Length: 328
Ligand code: ATP
Image (cartoon, rainbow, N blue to C red; front, side, top):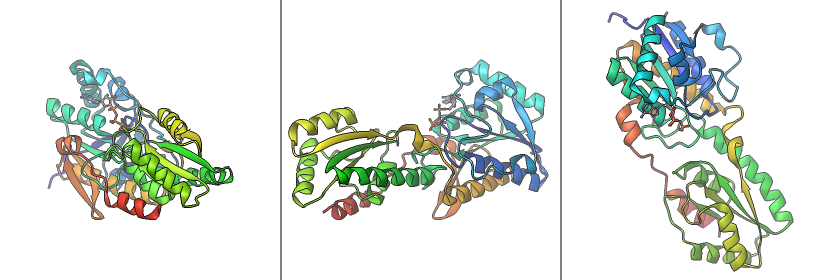
């Protein structure tokens, strides 16, 4: 087949996640391997509109596989949401001779790419980069595994202090509207309860479970709360509720925040990023467009953008049962 793609752009967009640099490295080196020129697009769609492009070769991405964040910087662009902004972006890409781009980001970034593809018939490919694992079409998004390891480490540390003082800790973790992070770190760190948006435990059952924990002789209790959980309006209101209704506990709250998005990517995320980059570039080269690269049953597969954006990523409810049994 005649290779029509000669210059590929790569960018990171939306929230950053560990593994984005490893994916940039993979895209750049796969381009080099196939003799396709590669340009880094800085600051996501913002940089695309401004023509902030830098030519990259295999050596430009040395020493970044282990780095958190993104060397290309990320941004959220209001202007790209407008037709005028996207026209500017198209003009900049055309001026630079870029034939296609790979966007590493979340569902918003994919929606932008899909609209851009429809408007200008421009080849695009997506790599899911977010710690939340909330994208349909892949069992793992880039950064998710690293975030799980980061959070488990922190909860282990909180447990040390919790058990020294017989304390109950509510620990809020990220995950937006889904409970993947909470559920997995809850099981991994041995939490007494896990509160996720997908399952409404109810305040009464929470109190009952905490009472049981206390009676069974536990010296500390950890409750992992997904940020999108609906049981209490927020984790501080949950604390107040338990304070008022369970006097036997000294309750503390820890909101882990943005540290969950940082740090050196895990080996799993580095390998995943490397595989995703290869698949994204090679798919563009053979003429595919408008797909997201994903992992399914340990195989790299493509999911059309519209499905990836509209579909729902499912949590593993079996883990809730495992957690219940483990916290006896
Ligand atoms: P995260 O999961 O971290 O939020 P994301 O990719 O979903 O990442 P968004 O801020 O939703 O992050 O989207 C990133 C960028 O994609 C936006 O700033 C905007 O430039 C572009 N974008 C999002 N939605 C659209 C849309 N409907 N039309 C055009 N562009 C869009």
